[in-house]
Image 1 (spheres, rainbow, N blue to C red):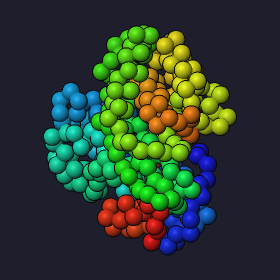
Image 2 (cartoon, one colour; image 1 turned 90 degrees about the vertical axis):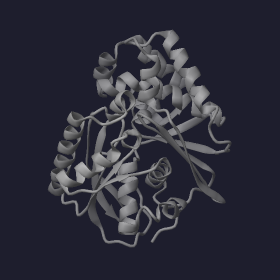
Image 3 (cartoon, rainbow, N blue to C red; image 1 turned 180 degrees about the vertical axis):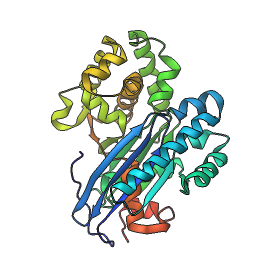
Length: 324
């Protein structure tokens, strides 16, 4: 279970809430207690549906995958109820944004589950990641929060005197890896191509000057798992990324997954994620970045707790550090 996180005094009573994020690689569920003293996760699980691959290959979410998505969301509704959640918020990200049948997906989810699937923009996704890290408290120095997903990467800058400034790159760990890696394990040449392509994407990134960086999401947390030294301070630097590449080049994804307790699907795309972390560090001349298990799901839970049904219209304000 994740550690308890500090939350500023909110304008709501303690309660259990839950959120689901429909992402390119997984459909991920989190539930926890939101209270003045902290956020305590109660349940956290995911199903690897790989919707981003359908969006890339077919430009839409096919019927069988949509049916599986609906079944997964229905089950998560039951899990949320079983842990006493008073609300369950559903958000969809990159695969649904890119799907030409996005309206059909949202309609089908509502018809079959009764839930509203909120299709968030890149900017909103970035704000949710930022809110999960800061809990609506402005940082003391310019902070970059990076969420490397399967199909896209969102990054947000917030400082004492600026922001939040949200940006996105249309590349994530899965999309980058699928485009370049055709061997298991990846060859040294493929790893070098991943690094070059990641640097090329980051060449288009915003011209900002963060003082510190926090990486959220599965890429960062799984990189920490395969580089044991990173578990000491939960940080990633160039030396540790190099060590991660050595692990990923040295054995098939299934072996890495079994050895470090991650899923084979995650292990198979981790080289692309490592390349993007490295490129972010290089682009912004950062010696290291911290890894956090904060997520857009936690950000969504906090946003709804602070702002209720108006959470989307108030999201930038909340991300800036202004609470209800």
